[in-house]
Length: 248
Image (cartoon, rainbow, N blue to C red; front, top):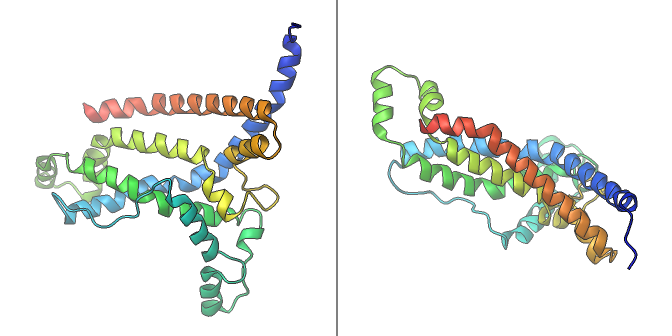
């Protein structure tokens, strides 16, 4: 058997790495920061819920599940449909403005994907935060109230540090889920317009099962896995100190 020269191997892998990196970074710049308020929203809402339902009950929340992705996509595609969508209908009824082509305009096509994903995942994060808040000793809040601490100071110096481990878990899992975006963009926009919402996983799947380029798809999947591993390790390293300070 003839060995493949290293230079040829690098010549094949380098463009694949650059393509995966470009798509991952491009999608991350748009999708990941837009879904970041998911963490803060979940934490702030849950703090209010915890004050009302101190020990116990959990109000109905939209919990995420793999089976609900298709339903989510169909729902938000209909809501933001260019012609018959409820969003355009409400906007036209209130302002008289013409419909906005959400699904066929680059940039705007991300709006239903982002809004739908935040709505879909916030319930899971709220459940985690509510469970963690149940383990925070109430004596700490009582002591802070006796010392004259404001709600903002209590939230900053008691709630946030003690919830640091849960926040680390939520941030890492949400980041990984953002990079693995697939079902929402496939159902809502099918990667369009002009592939502007095509995620890395969708591109790799198309390369393998539509173009039958199994070797390049496997290489891109491996490179993408390495990128996610590096980013996860970096997040753990950046947040590990806050977690240790919260526990201490």
